[in-house]
Amino acid sequence: MTERVSRVGRKKSAWTNYRLVRTVHVYSSMLMLLIMLFFTLTGVTLNHRDWFSGRGQASEQVVNLPAELARHPAWQTDPLVVAAELRQWLSAEHGVRAAYVSYDWDADDQLLLIDFKRPGGRSSVEVSPSQAQLLLIEQPKGSVALLNDLHMGRYSSGWWRGFIDFSALVMLLFTLTGVWLVIPQHKRRLRLLAVSGLGLAVTLLFSVLATVSF
Image (cartoon, rainbow, N blue to C red; front, top):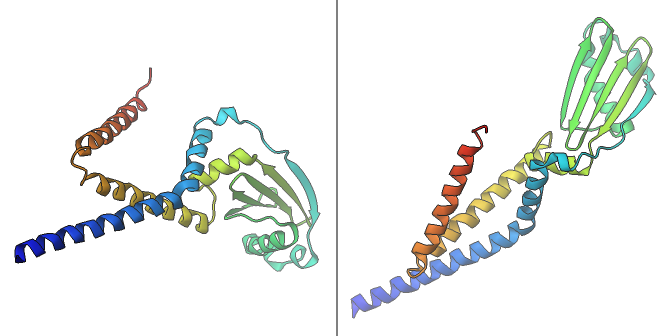
């Protein structure tokens, strides 16, 4: 009698675990539905960039520096000190923002170069302290380039890179729970695992072919 009760308890526990895993699998799949669609479509556009060669129109604008920046004493000692203040001013007054910003001082031409890189475009700034002016060049690359950069996390903010990591974890959870659900299915388990093995073999084959030139 005790053994029978124990066996019934194990079956009930196994069924409870199965329902829990199935629930996690279903909800993780629904959570990843549109995210997986996004990464699938952008995987195609990323692999065939030549299909989408359209770029936005580049624009140039000459801007006068505010007096406090034009007369900043650091121009004579360390121009890169002014660069950080210029970045804040460009962001506030002209909406020039990016997660990746680099600075360079050209001592020969007396120019401060600031490069703003963001998904789908970049902005270049050439600052001439002697003329109290800067040249702002906007270079949009188009919406497809924006989606491709987001797919790779290129020049994106920490928030977006964190979202990619979160998506990867949820996708891993979806995959592992799928395997867990296959294991108890005795009649179909070998066939399903064979299909999984076939997918692995195809992936390995094409990864080898990717390194071979014909």
